[in-house]
Image (tube, rainbow, N blue to C red; front, side, top):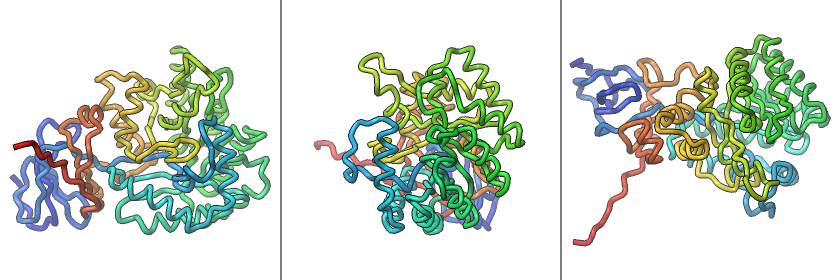
Amino acid sequence: MPTDHALDLVFRRVTIAGHREPLDIGAKDGKIAAIAPRIQCDAPDIDAGGRLAVPGFVDSHIHLDKACLLGRCGHSHGGLAGAIAAVAAMKRGFTEADVYQRGGKVIEKAIGKGTTRMRTHVEVDPRAGLRSFAAIKALKADYAWGLDLSICVFPQEGLTNDPGTEELLVAALEDGADLLGGCPYTDTDPAAQIERLFALARRFDVDLDFHLDFDLDPSWMHLDEVCRQTESHGWGGRVAVGHVTKLSMVPPDALAAIAQRLSDTGIALTVLPATDVYLMGRQENHAVPRGLAPAHILVERGVTCSIATNNVLNPFTPFGDVSLLRMANLYANVAQCGVQDFERCLDMVTTMPARLMRLGDYGIAIGNPADLVILDATTPGDALAEIAEPIMGFKGGRLSFERPAARLHPLR
């Protein structure tokens, strides 16, 4: 029973994935300083009562700049092209204050749902200019107390066909953008866009995150070119692809070959269940395909996969409360995951997106930030199955949110 009189805070009887019995976790100067069955200490403590703790959820793909747009556009039940067009028309009028307000609203919800790390994509082009980027930079600084935000700038409506966009991407990268994204399927020359983005990534030494193969025709894929360029540039482990809904339409042998290629090249994949299921298959009036890449199967074959939010309350996805646990549960339902896959689904909103984002200080381990979210569940499987409520969260050892359990008032 170690004694430590120098700790600032002790979390008692905390369940951690991979451990059979609850443990105590001691925090000092914002970092985890001790983990043991019992810590003898006179520091303030919080008794988790055996509840599960995670080091916060990791949202590897969200769009803060175009969140919360319902009511502005009159867009109803359209497909992908309609959603892109609707937002393209609106973003000309986006101001920094507007993007800041809407993005901040989403970040606050995310913190309250237990997210501690986030990668947001931000549209940069002659219509949006750098206004959205400036707003997101301000949000990154202002909400660092509760969430670490990474900014991915990308050309939503094309690059080679949209003069002035590349110069704006360069300006954003020079002004502190963390990484670069792409959207080849909107470009008149998709392969050229991919090539230009790899060149920029090498110039600025940043990671890449592509929106890719967002339809249901598996006869061709831009994924092939991304794999080729990743190998050519030696960028393995630094490339992610999102959506890739085409993978929902390939047979098992073809999927196995693609999984092997992704694993060999070190390309990670993010599925966006709410958007992918909402937008795919809209041309069908029966037997509608799910349009969801089978991430849990890819994980079995060595691919790093994550489940993320994507859009919130806009034409791409008119739903959303920024709960990654709810999103993982949605994925498990749509993908018809068995109970044996529940923990893996939880991994896809915690440890695996942390690996995708190369977060070297993520996890409940001595020396890492004391980022802890206590869930109202005692096992990872139960947390996933029940969409367990996050009841409190800590960022750097400081309380960032709390949500007391519901109190029932039965008849006496």
